[in-house]
Amino acid sequence: MKTIELSESLPKHDLHLEPSSVAVGFFDGVHKGHQEVIKTAQDKAKELGIQTAVMTFDPHPSVVLNKKIQHARYITPLSEKQEILEAMGIHYLFIVRFDQSLAALPPEKFVDDYFVELNIKHVVAGFDFSYGHKGKGSMETLPQHAKGRLTYTVVDRIDQEHTKVSSTRIRDLLKKGNVSSVNELLGREFNIEGTVVAGDERGRTIGYPTANITDMEEQYLPKVGVYAVTVEYKGERYYGMANFGMKPTFHSEAASPSLEVHVFDFDEDLYGTRLKVFFHHFIRDEQKFNGVEDITAQLNRDEREIRRYFQL
Image 1 (cartoon, rainbow, N blue to C red):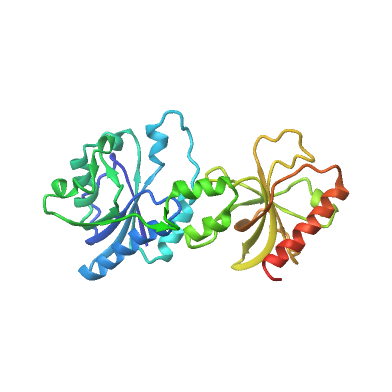
Image 2: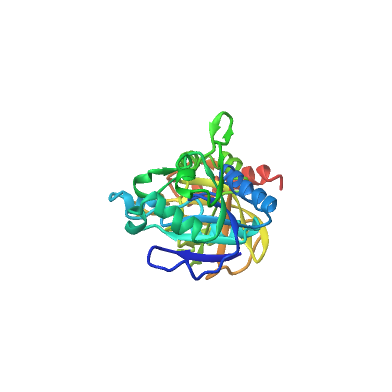
């Protein structure tokens, strides 16, 4: 997959791209609804004998258009989105810089600069996709702006259990800790990736050493609590349990939640490594304990429940 970064300040005419069928949207989550849009673009590419492309935007438009939002968190940060799209067999990934210049672009100029100029022959998007200044461009106006230079397909909403599959719905489920339903909508396990750093090593003293994960600033985070998880390390998956929260037993006030993972039947030094933690099932809310004995007893119960869940 060839990744091409675009913006209003970068020239596009000298890219010499092969003709493509593009799926366009923000695609946070690359959930089942997004996958249908992308698959439709792939099918059209095969039909026309051209390449498949995906066009996404960075950062999220809300960061530019809503002054109250300084920083966005993503279900799939850009690096993970790239991995997923490459695995899907995409040829071109266009990452369009979303800034005030792009936001002010007339819709017909957007079509000229970001579809026609890039040798895009077919555009696929969801029914609610909009483009151009104040979102005045839509899939209904695309024929008018395209002027016969490309064709298009509109993908209707994808429902699951009579409700639209959407990034908003996934974020709402994550707020409730319902990662099982999130995984159904994604078609894969929701995950958080970060770097393992040294912690207070308190878990090691009670038989539950943990990998403490940092670098989660870009990721949309789930409800605090204890989860059944798997961890990817050196291409292998390991079972474990994770506490995402404030550790109220030991910290009266924490600036932000932390992620601690105890990997079952594992005894390797993980400090400094990048880990992916996959969330499978919510076990319980985080709670404050009276002391180490109470914590250890609860961790024993959590481990038994999670091992039963994974049928270990």
